[in-house]
Length: 383
Image 1 (cartoon, rainbow, N blue to C red):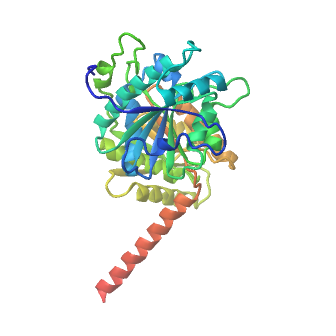
Image 2: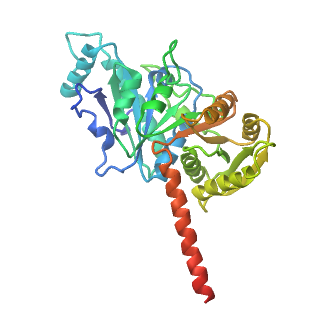
Image 3: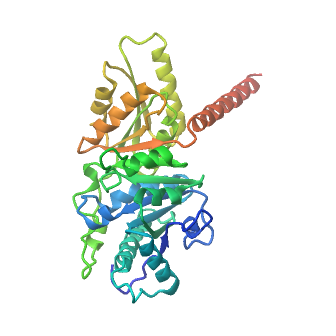
């Protein structure tokens, strides 16, 4: 991008000063005149912007834009810059108000924050090229704690979802502490998506950090491999419907086919097969008639091995988060995600539904209503 071209507006905000502060309210609307109700927030960490990640720019943004497009919403790229203490936050607040760095404290994070704004502006331009109809905004959020800073933005926003990319510092925990991803999965009051990008992410770094030569156009223009096929392993857990919705969003954006997959044990109860078929039909219903869908029911002694083997022939795996109250779900689907994440080519998108069973109940209710309507039409037509 040339220096004289117009860049996207990227604002600066800091974490709340008090419980009644609303200094980040513009994060919901950004520069839009009328903000969409649904916002997918993508935290962009210091690790991602400062180090070699091997993530292609376009691939990094594809899922977020697809989720926003599916929900008639927008994307907010949120660079989270961590500072040491409240004094540093106050320095940033003064800079936001005056537009001038403090002369009394030359060693401030202002220079880094301005670099983040330039980097985010480049990312916004790339995201807008992917799907021009999806509004994309950006902000730099200055915080003293990475995890709490993200949760503060998500708190209480029912029409907000967050997409957390693995391999960018969010999945690192110290000693017995939970990682940012684990904490947000447990504590966020909105839908949470966690994505681990596989080989199709690309071999270039997202940015080549250089204060004098901030050139990312060659990287931004490089094409990530396309997603042609998606695998959706389904179970009876409360997050399967959201996983199917996520697969539907990516399928619509990439014109990809979807395989819905369920595994039963060879020695399972006689009704396990019919229950499995029902799960497959339910996921197929959520995916809708516009997605090319196949369903497969397989007998296997090891569920994890069966899903991982099936994943090798697909570009992306969309899976529901393990159910916290179910040890079986934790063992099976936690193991599946961990194992899939070890595969270099597998892109794994995990979904955690904030509504738990409400989304599944809605689809089942809607399917029942449609069946009733179709039955009525058949009776009227035959009379």
